[in-house]
Length: 372
Image (tube, rainbow, N blue to C red; front, side, top):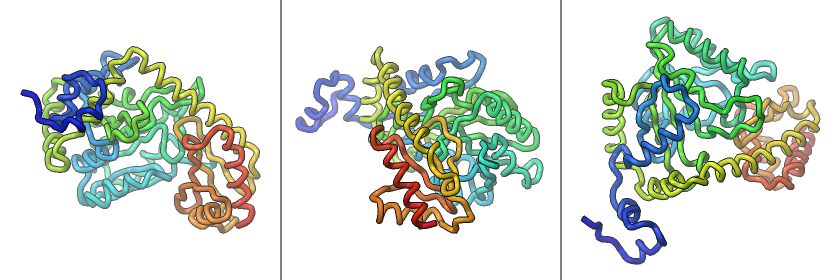
């Protein structure tokens, strides 16, 4: 049966095939269209070992929606959620504000180096046997760091050891999956190292078309569990997610799924994705060189090698908060950064032309010097 639709509305889709136009104008299944779930799973599993389990992804209305669904599933009043600091503020809103969970933190960087034990450190004071959730964001926002092979092994070892002490859900927030710019750094999600690795550990993968397909306005995400797709546990988890999606948003947007399918069906899509990665890699290298020249007495540049950002820290001895610096840079230098308490500033090279990046770094250094 063909959906009744407005001609002007349908015309906006141009030469979309009739079956796709019909799908775009109708309501999506709660779990998402079968074709996009299948194609996204195939894309996820490129290079993954056949023995590593992963469910058929469920479609969400963006990655933030996926995080909220995970919070509804595994959060709750007083539940422990471990998050390395600094972190994206939505984690606290999704878990603590919405469900009453306790956010436990530990530093993601120690002495200027990445800390692969951050989640385990955050859970160190939790009684043995008490369930917990850990947020593993790689590449990270705001830090844009992806661990090297040795750090990766240390992460997995620490989490498997933690799973020996308690039921553990590890949420792999893979929003920036694949955006790695150094050849020796693994691009694969840590989800594939954790799924099925311990009977007491459930790995959850949240990813989507936002960054992976540069489809920021589509609000199209996916939620995948580290279990066999036809298992009883997969069916139970999917049923729970379907109930939550139905009660929260009804169903995920059909239009976004249809648009994304045009890309996923294309034989050239991965070349286009790689072209975006190379564009961002060029900006990353220019920013890396520019920040290497800043005065270390004014700014500490934390390690970054991937993603869309760089994170700098204002030395404590200067007595300048990140919010003070943000306001000063905006008012005096027409430069907008994200402030993260107490003394971090996030620089987004992804939204700055390559030629303008050295000037951006100069303005940040000048602004901090004026405040100091």
